Figure 1 (cartoon, helix red, strand yellow):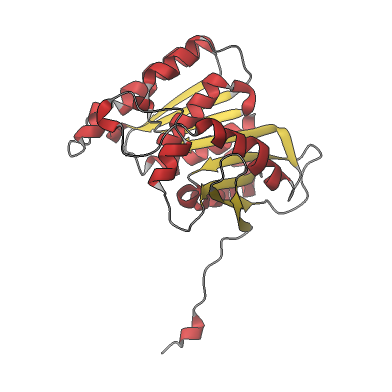
Figure 2 (cartoon, rainbow, N blue to C red; figure 1 turned 180 degrees about the horizontal axis):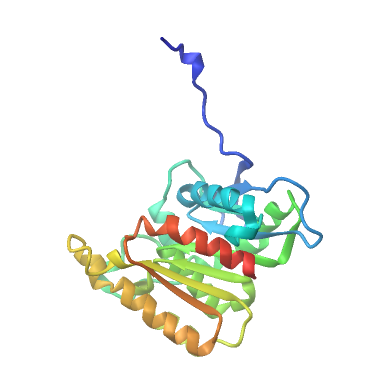
Length: 271
């Protein structure tokens, strides 16, 4: 049996739309991707989860939410709006943009310095709060008290930096394999001054990101697992009962995202 070329067409992610935005906060272009649950929102509005590195992570998180929210009573994930924030093109990542937007300044170690522009985190946060969230909320009713943030790797560092500097900016924070090595002293300083906040926090990392990855000496030097466990303990001392640390035994820096997405969605539900 032969199939004509017309038998195939592009696959479209259900419930998802996308648009390009030029941020007033920094003048840079971003692609916002939006997944909205079917049906009417609750009276207060749907919860919302902002997912950074949207070009790479949005499809994974949006489809995980769509599948799990189908049976919320079993999965612990209720219907919610997923907003992906990514580069203005269709590639998964933009390395230069990530270094600029997710960092409050240069890295602590000289070996990581000088490759890209850094220090744009404050302007990027302003874009999220003042532009991206209102644009998404203009399409569907959202509960302003239940907006959470998820970031992976360097975006995970950004999420932790926001937590320690602006804890009330989001209702919950999911930092997956966060690049704590970028500037751990800044995070520890922020934790030391952290005031009580109702925000829930997830720190997740793959066990294979340290020691079990002999071919990746640089990542081993960064002590990915040790750093997450240490910071989690420090955060727990400041915010007892608010911090959850997950070390997934069979996951690495890339694979951990799919597993942690479920935990992040449950955290966003529980806020």
